[in-house]
Length: 328
Ligand code: UT7
Image 1 (tube, rainbow, N blue to C red):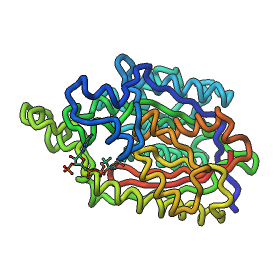
Image 2 (image 1 turned 90 degrees about the vertical axis):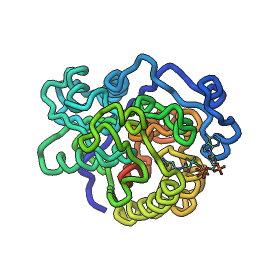
Image 3 (image 1 turned 30 degrees about the horizontal axis):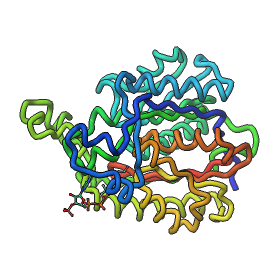
């Protein structure tokens, strides 16, 4: 097994204070039921931002991660933010976060990989540490999906939530850290989960607003099938690359999109559900934030500790997918 280049020195998370349960959809005129949502997705509630911005959530999660890592903002060499719902389209969410936390020395940039963003971001940061461009990196997955959700579309609005998760990566000194990463994409399937309007091809106009194409559109069934196939493959690839088997994994943290996708992925990866972290019931799908939020919770709850081996696996719009094995 290769000697790790970078290890996770601290994690943090933040979610908006406002909680929306499945029963709250009736009040906004959505024809759905708690039973349908729980049965099809496993989601019972989600946190929806009222006042918190992406920068607010990212800052809170980052400060917690830095505190646990014993790292000051001025020590950060790079800040990588994974988000599909930044506060503004230019400049990046990462530079807004940099300003908010006062990380004056860092090079800050976003990665666009939707729900797989935390794994993509960590992969890029690990590579930059490996070539000597950085010793200390902050990776943040953060979303305010509620601002790009069509609240009249019951097939999507029940799924998403807001939040942020962060991790500080430091140059590895011992045999702990990222043991393997795997990332892939298939842009030919991009239309199955996208925001068609509001970008360069269809800039904001009354037409875009009328057909609500600035919001997320999704073909749920196709996304579901691809998510199961790709996450299952990714889990195996990361294990093979790290020369480990499923028996070596203490906990799998899959992207929290849907309990049925999580269960199918665990089955394919030959990992019992007792070793799979699930919080989709409390947070819904928070896209890039889902894995780092779950990682921080699992560490806080003592399900993971120093020396534990964790398998992270994600899938999202693009399509993008990926996996990572970390020895904490
Ligand atoms: O982060 C990665 C991105 N996202 C995902 O991973 C999501 C992947 N997809 C899914 O999780 C599932 O496809 C959904 C949960 C989105 C939908 O579940 P499904 O079992 O694939 O349902 P469906 O889309 O095939 O819809 C079944 C029925 C439809 O009614 P008809 O046409 O059979 O009469 C829908 O209109 O369920 C209806 N429906 C709803 N009913 C009550 C759709 N949304 C709702 C709803 N409440 N919220």
